[in-house]
Image: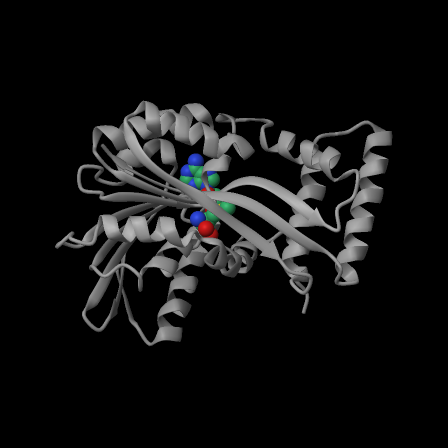
Length: 293
Ligand SMILES: C[S@@+](CC[C@H](N)C(=O)[O-])C[C@H]1O[C@@H](n2cnc3c(N)ncnc32)[C@H](O)[C@@H]1O
């Protein structure tokens, strides 16, 4: 089967299983326990919603009825979400109805209403009613935004006494077998995450540390634990996705020719290992649940 490693929707569909396995069970329990005695429907806003992975992961786990707002900046993702949710409902024999801008998924006595909104984190208060939202969820998202954006967002959370469940916050990648140049090229990869962009500089691999600082400053109580991908030798599609991301990122850095040459050799070595099914990749992340004091 031909896989288009540049297709962002396909990438999210591949990473879903790795994320589901990596999500930290203690943090998940803290989140579910926090709302254990919540008698009404739970209001959730999912930022950087992609194709609704968080909803698809949590719908069955959250006992209450749910009202979700998906906030996603990329219209291609929003379009693909409808298809993903249809498949989600069909595979489980759940009912799905579409009414104007709201999707309703129901199963036995549980219902979720979902609004798909195109927009950015910076406008969250215009997209979701923060006085009503119980928890903002975000998966694989906060490395993409800046410290300043997160600070403004945290202030909004704290003012409205909203919880935060931030899972799969990127930290580090490592390869097995290890090679001497890994560190050198991973450093470039992490530099690329912090390249200047229209909104500023993304937090990149510093996201967990910076988020914890800011959440503490805004008097939120915090639980944090690790969530790690172990991408085994047989999962060559995930290896290819990750190597492809690195290759594109390094290319955009316009390295001097000798450096680019060394990188190309290093990349060819990794691809050969992947082809021979000898490569393993570990990716470290953190999961954070923060709640008002
Ligand atoms: C790595 S993907 C994760 C998607 C989804 N949460 C998942 O786990 O499959 C990050 C998503 O955040 C979106 N995104 C990036 N910056 C954003 C912003 N400032 N506001 C809203 N969405 C954003 C991207 O378009 C992308 O769909």
